[in-house]
Image (spheres, rainbow, N blue to C red):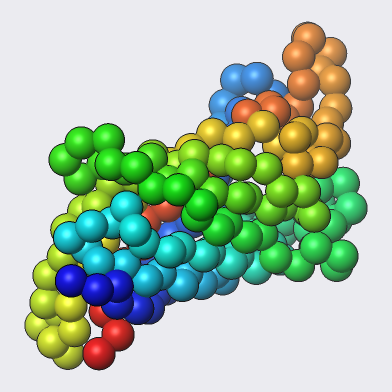
Length: 178
């Protein structure tokens, strides 16, 4: 089989994250606007091309003041760096429907290699329109400081307000272009 273009179904997809807050709990959020350009043969996903673009200003932690702070120069600096991108450079099967997807992640103008643990959830026909639909989920961890997101505050009890480690998770539903 040859590679086919797959279009993101944003309604059934999500890019989320969590960080440790005050060393005792987690702050979670999503990016509400993003797109994925995927060309793949689902019978051989190791040959796929994957590009994801996230609108950094679409960050949503359900707290307007925190979201505005995250958009500022202390964090994403969305005025100067409006997008976060991921471009796959290598895909390896790790058994079954599991893959290591390595690529270049760019945040705030800094690009670093990152490996995502990805699961191919399968494919099906959409009963509402007949298109072939495929699902993928995945996760990774990054150091936000490696991408220039260094703002923090010391806590009176020791430790810091925001952890360096950020957990990223996603669910993608893609529709095969006909």
